[in-house]
Amino acid sequence: MYASRNISLCTKDCLCLFVCPTGATDTETGQIDRDTCIDGCRACVDACPSHAIHLVFEEYPEPKAKDPSVSEALMSLGAGKIEQEGLARGLSEDDGNPGAARLARALARSSRILAEDGVREAGFLTPQCRASKAYLAELAESAEGGDRDTLRALSAD
Amino acid sequence: MAYAHAATAVLSNLAKAAEKQHRDDEAADFGILADRFRPTSPPEGGLAELRDGLEEDLDSEYPAIRSAADTQGDRGALRAVTWGEKVTKIQKSLVDRYLAKGEALMEGKDLFLCEACGFIYLGDAAPDICPVCKAPASRFSRVK
Image (cartoon, rainbow over all chains, first blue to last red; front, top):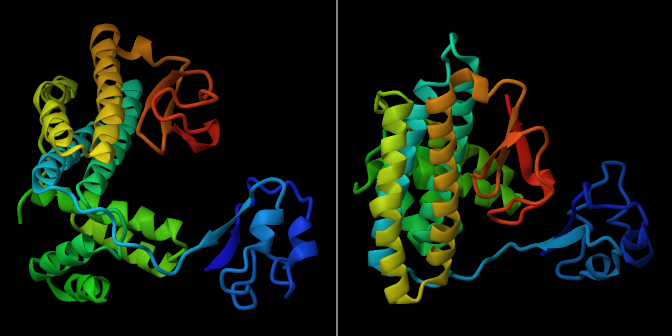
């Protein structure tokens, strides 16, 4: 686990510089140097008065398994929301009605977010979880060429 | 595969998950794949057809998820239904208002999208807090 700074929260009080044993928090980029950050140290996380620093995990626990009845219903929703996104995208180039086109662009993006939230709760929470790996492996079989190679690499442990 | 149209959403969701884990290469791969798996021939129609789809979600899709999630005690899924139903109602309301008022509805107003839950706000400035998911104003984008 290494530390990462959210620049938009950082109030530049620089307590992280005081407590860091390796100087990893003091860089010209404003980001914490991953190479010198001590695994799991978290001194800067605890010292930061603006809560701008968090630990990035390298491993994640397996999420709670989803019941197939819940997953199925959510995947059905996700597929429908993607169809709505497609329909809305088709309306987003309406030159004669700029307001309608703008509304369609918002609806398309909103539908995508609803689809993503649905499928996430269907069991695809992290790229590392078993459900995601199995899904990517199955998707690879329906893909060709470079897409298949990328999907296979992403589905590998 | 079942629900093949959902594949692009699985991939773009994993792109976001990888990005939050600072796995930038994986996030980029998932993002490219999400585009490749978009449905090749999306349904055609106007705002009226879109409105019918939203109504269908509110009448049958969300209640079906709620029923399954209730039975299983799946609070994560219930959370997604709670937010999703609210956002879908807002979507439908905006479409209905546009169908009634036309371009006049949009004139002089901006659209703001909550990147966390999909809530859409029509007005002068993004809300301080998303009324659906309570994300701060910084999570809103103006839709151009």
